[in-house]
Image (cartoon, rainbow, N blue to C red):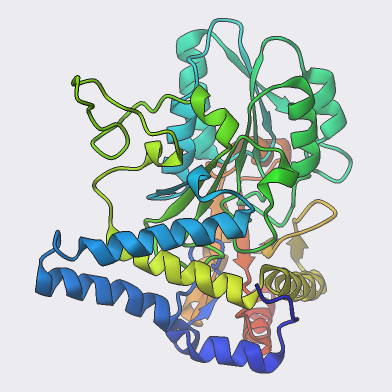
Length: 399
């Protein structure tokens, strides 16, 4: 894995191998980043093999690349390949692991960070309502991060799960995931991390985090294809998870006709896999490891710091990011326009950002009195001239 800083020449070389860098000013890398030409070619090549050899007959190469993706993901997360499942996305992976837990009972409690992804909350609330269980929010410290000490005080024999979104979707805060994990481990409570925005953006070490389950998305900082994701399940925790849906890959029938549930994380995989996307994911993982996650993190942090500082200097702009350590997601609002209007008017200038509503992080948005935010998310590919174009566009809207 490369640990050298990213030089400007290296960034330019990466941009030259990324078709979208020439056609769009992209500040929605947290939604879906720009894939490299090599990732696109890996997908195309598998599709061509399927078209010319037959989809099933071309499966051998696709399966080989899927296993390569599994090994590379294990390196990226400091895990064992047997602890990695390839999924169709972040939410499907998280939802499958949550549904595989022992059913909740009346009086059980789930503890969540205030910044939890809305999709995860929906799954938890439905399960809690059916069982007569409850969901409580871990208080934040003075910087806006989930507070490990407050979590420790909330722990009792009724707590069945601690869930944390590490990097929230609505801004640049980075939660203290390892410190939260230390509390969960001390109390012997299962710990799920939603690392959708973290994987590929900053170093992820599942042993250091102390998590039982962690999920990530292929399409975000990893620059992989949409429709791909990673699910890590700690080996010693796997026996506590019984998938709600199985098939001939996850639980093939044995000689006696009974299902044999796999003893690795692939018990969460389906026989119906998009192997072309797995080929693309394998290439994207290899590129991330070659570039170096430490170097990626350092460059993203420097770019995001600059963007926050210069946005804050524009009259009428409020930068909304909390925390101490921050990610490449930069949230702001403009006094004269709602976030949707900011997104639309920047799009007219060829600049892509997003506007996030309450549904993304409902607990945090409600706690902060926000109904929407404009979000500009950067990548290690982001160039100086793109920052200037975005700032010029916001200045024009503010005036």
